[in-house]
Image (cartoon, rainbow, N blue to C red):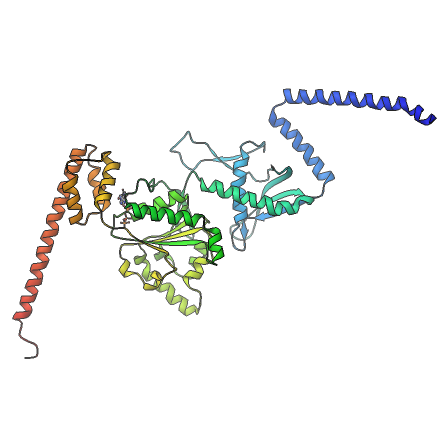
Amino acid sequence: MTSLYNQVPFVSTVFSLYTTCSAIMMLFRTILNEILPKEIRDYISLKFVNIFSSNFQSSFTFVIEKQWEFVDNQTFRAAEVYLQRRLAGLSTGKLVVGSSSLKNPEAQLKLGVPVNTKIIDEFEGIHLEWTLHSSETKLYPYEKRYFHLTCEEEFREKIMTDYFTYLTKSAEKTLKHRENLHIYTYSEDEWEAAIFEHHTTFETLAIEPNLKTTMIDDLDAFSKGKDFFKSVGRPWKRGYLLYGPPGTGKSSLVAAIANHMRYHIYDLQLQSISDDGELRNILISTENRSILLIEDIDCGSDASRRRQKKKKEDDSDEDDDGLWSSCGEERIIIFTTNHKEKLDPALLRPGRMDVHIHMDYCTPYVFKKLVAMYLKTNDHVLFDPIEKLVLEVSVTPAEITQQLMASKNADIALKGLLEFLETKKMKKEEDNRVEEEGEIEEAETKEAEPDAET
Ligand SMILES: Nc1ncnc2c1ncn2[C@@H]1O[C@H](COP(=O)(O)OP(=O)(O)OP(=O)(O)O)[C@@H](O)[C@H]1O
C-alpha cells in the first residue's frame, strides 16, 4: 500500500507530461498543416513511412518484367497504364511528360512513369510502393525494364490476387477510353507508330442500316465475350473479310471499327514477309486490344504461296490459325480485297474469317445518307432522278462524295452529280453496245469460217 501511495505523484506527473506532449503535438500538427504545402507534408510522411517500413516491417517485393516468355508482359503494360493515371497528384519529385501531336497545343501533356522514382499507392488501406527500374543488357534490346512493387509481407496474398485484378481492370478501363489511336506500319524489323487520324465512325459511314447494326452488335458482343470465348475453348479473336470494288468504303469501315473499339491498328503488308518465323515475330510484337489489318490480301497470295512452300520444306505442321492463336488476346484481324474470287479457298474456310462483309456499289439509301452529311439536306427535287440512276449504274460512294464535295450549294452539287451519273450511264450503254457488236461479229466470223472437219 505504501509503495502505491508513493507512486501517486509519479503517476500524476506522467499524466501531466502526456497532456503537455499531446497539446504540443496537436499544435505542431496544426502549424505543419497551416504552414507547409501539401507536397512537403506528403514528403515528410513518406519519409516516416519509409523509415518505419524499412526498420520495423518485413516487406515483400513483386518483380514485373517488361518481357515475359519472349512476349510483352501484359501485367507490366497494365502497371504502366495504371500508374500513368496516378502520377498527376503524387509528389514523385520528377515526372516524364510528353505529347504525340502538335495539332492541339491546349491538350494536356501525357505523363510517363519516371525511372528509379518511388510511386506510392494504397489499396484497401494497404501501403504499396512502385518503382520502375532499368538496366543495360548485352543483348538486343539492350535495356531491361521492370517494376518493383513492395508491400508488407502479411499482405502478399491479398496483393497477389485482389490488387493485381484491380490493376488490370483499371488499366483495361483506361485503354477503352484511349485519347489517341495509333496506326503502326511494319518497316525494317519493327513497327513504326503514327497517330491515327481517320475520323470515320459508324455515324459518318454511309452503309445500309442492317449492316451497321450487325457490325456494331458483333463488335460489342466480341468485346464483352472474354468468358464466352474461354468457355468454348477458342482464342479471343475475330476475323473479318471486307470485299468489294475500290472506293466502296472498306478502309473507311476499318477506321469506324478502330474508333468504335478504341483499338490501335497494325497495318501489315503481307508481301514483305518471307516466312512464318518472321510473321510470328511480327504478330507477337503487337498489343492486345488491337486490329491487325492486311489490305489487298489477293496481292499477298504470292507471298503466301512462298510461305506455304517454305513451310512444307521445313516440315512444320503448324498452320496459320496456330500462328494467329498463339499471340495475345482480344484481337481483331481484318483482311480486305477487291477480288474475293481470287483468294486462296483455304483462307475462306469457316473459322478463319468469322464474318464476310460485302462492300457494294451505292444504293439510294447510301446516296441520301451521303447527301445528308455533305450537303446537310434531306430532300431535293433532283433526288428522284439521281436515285433512279444510282440503281442503273455502278457508282461507288467514293465517286459520289467526290461530286458532292464540288460545292456546298446543294443545287450545284446535285446537278453535277446528276450529269456525272448520266455520263456514266451513256458510257455503260456505249460499252454494252460495243460488246454486243463484238459478240455478233465474232459469231459471224465463226459462221463464215470453213468447218475444220470438212
Ligand atoms: N460507305 C462510305 N461512307 C462514307 N464515305 C465513303 C464510303 N465509302 C467511301 N467513302 C469515301 O470514299 C473515300 C475512299 O473510300 P475507301 O478508301 O474507304 O474505299 P475502299 O473500298 O477502301 O477503297 P480501296 O479498295 O481502293 O482501298 C473515303 O475516304 C470516303 O471519303
